Amino acid sequence: MILTITLNPAVDIGYKLDSFTTNAVNRVNDVSKTAGGKGLNVARVLNELEEPVAVSGFLGGNLGEFIRQEVYKLNIKDFFVNISGETRNCIAMIHKGKQTEILESGPTITKGEATKFLKEFSEFAQKVKFITISGSLPKGLPKDYYVRLLEIADQHSTPVLLDTNGELLSTTLSKSIPFLIKPNKEELGDLLGEQLTSIEDILEGLNSSLFAEIPWVVVTIGEEGAIIKHHNNIYQITPPQIEVINPVGSGDAVIAGFAAGFSRNLSNEKLIRFAITMGVLNSMESKTGHINAARIKSIMAQVEFKKL
Image (cartoon, rainbow, N blue to C red; front, side):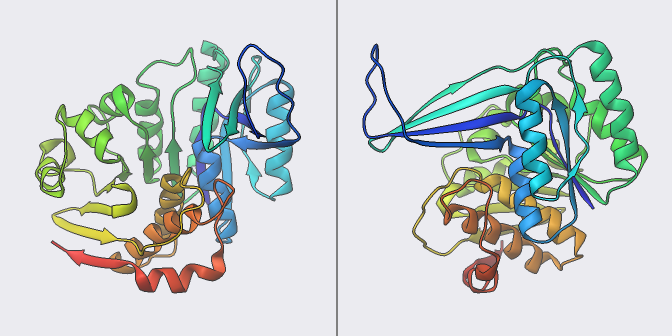
């Protein structure tokens, strides 16, 4: 089983409008509500790959119960921890090809709730083969909270795939060694304190001692694919040209692909092709965190794999 962690999940609400006017009443008939959060996107893709998967994080109130029900409908195991606060909403208003987002910050986690999660996480880590940790921290948690999770996972020899950015990623890497990290080009530049504008810049950045002990560093570069470092080997991956329907969540799908590939003991080349294919397939769907598994073989055959 694979466990995905989303510490600050949300109910994602999508409003599709013909037009949007400020300081006025806007009526909407096209409304969608889904269980949102990067780790939940990972879990949905894993579920569609028929991988046993569980989800965890903090949930509270009626919105938390909505997420629980959505997870239940997908037959995904629910390892969420209850909190006294209310799970947040994240609203996207889509109008004339534009998207306006209103993102709530979410609940404040109490010290007792944070401690309870660490205890339960230790139990979860013993039950699963791999763990993915995605996104940001909710209010109330210390900046080194991911470090604590990684320490616990390491105690049980459970590899962690980490997908976060900014100061949180920097803090975590200063004290911990995840099994895999997945920064995009801009996030890699922020981590190194440099602006990376070319493939050569990325390759030079990957030589940093910061990444020396991390087994897998996956640098995604949008439609251009990815540069991947595995120990001392560097690979350039180029996806096929496709019609992009919705790129949101494609990075989460890549994480799902790697987690599933590791679980299946795929060889390095097949693993990488498979993981990148998940990102491509997600971008071909209108719903975030979804793939059409029937297209896997066809897309994988079109992914270009080059060892540098």
